[in-house]
Image (cartoon, rainbow, N blue to C red; front, side, top):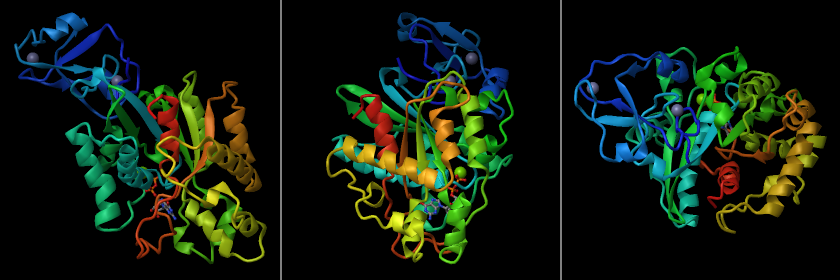
Length: 379
Ligand SMILES: Nc1nc2c(ncn2[C@@H]2O[C@H](COP(=O)(O)OP(=O)(O)O)[C@@H](O)[C@H]2O)c(=O)[nH]1
Ligand SMILES: [Mg+2]
Ligand SMILES: [Zn+2]
Ligand SMILES: [Zn+2]
């Protein structure tokens, strides 16, 4: 069994659904539109068993070819999708917490992970490649600019409704996929009830909740003279986490709590005589070293456990203990399998709108994904 790469629902193993992709006239799709959060169209559909489908499906109205889609959200599945296994990861976080930049850098780093796994990575669909190159990669690596915070209700945000589907190649004979879904921070900052287009959080394999430490007032005050151009306006992380917990509901995704832009915390070393600078200067701390993939693709458990404990106490030290509580003892009473991480996608504070000359040296970017893949037996 595997999941739909769009709504992340588990595909029913014995029921296959097909949609005409031929000459029938497209009409508004009420169901598809609810799950997508923006208008999508519909053509005639058919249900079939796997045996019947293997003989080939033709549209009963126009006799043209059909394509398999998700019975729940009507998303067109990539070819041979059901033969593989997908790990579906949803990014969450307030505006400007670094979700888009993280994805931009992560996809590059996944090439190294695939190498360590002795496979190769590729985009599973042309749309994924096109969106990655246009939205995430080009701004990051070609112009070396920074992706602007993603606006709501803007036609160009349609990319956030499309999953990035990556093929990790076969692992022990099974084609493995990694699906990433980005989200507009605004959608999580004021999530009213009943948003089926955000329903994928409930069914995700893992949710990565990005938390920007520069939003914490104590950190902000100390960074004000050091890296003023870095201090973005974002929403309240506690509120986002509350909305996220509501969206997850009875779902059981793993939850990675990720302190993003960690280079800014590392910059606190340069603020003399403060307690935070002493904490950040501790040379024994896991959060100042990154052994990368030198010990193989799987996470090192000792290192991961030490990091988890350090981040947990750092959050408390920063006055964000309520975030830790909301993760460990949510109102719902159902705590999720969770772990704390730090990442820096850019590796160094940015200088205004341009990356520092030394470019990108990311820090611990793969850790949360390695954890998610490892929990599913991929690594
Ligand atoms: N210092 C630092 N800044 C970052 C990092 N990642 C993102 N940023 C900054 O945060 C801003 C928002 O990032 P973006 O990915 O667009 O956030 P999103 O709204 O969550 O998608 C960017 O313009 C960057 O200036 C990082 O790793 N380090
Ligand atoms: Mg974004
Ligand atoms: Zn679906
Ligand atoms: Zn047709």
